[in-house]
Length: 125
Image 1: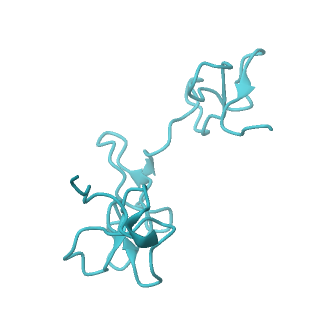
Image 2: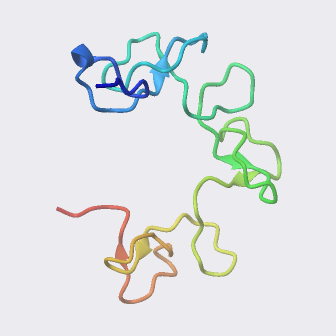
């Protein structure tokens, strides 16, 4: 059969995970998953903060643009967290954790959750 070149080549080639890590030069395609990456490998798939030399994933940017461009440390004045959804209550800046059981996504913060809402971000086992 054909070899899926997007999969990790670690674990003697038997790893079923997608490859996201590889050589920092970026000249080669990602070859390893997080489990099989070496110490010198970097995440080649995820967007990085636009500040030169910063390897963090960005969450902050212009709200009108909607694209995360900077990490928390390097965000510009006026930038907001555009990567994570916000509570549906009017002008609430908090990240939601509560929603309807079996309804999927978190929609409200603890302060604005409806009476029947449950924490859908933290599993209780």
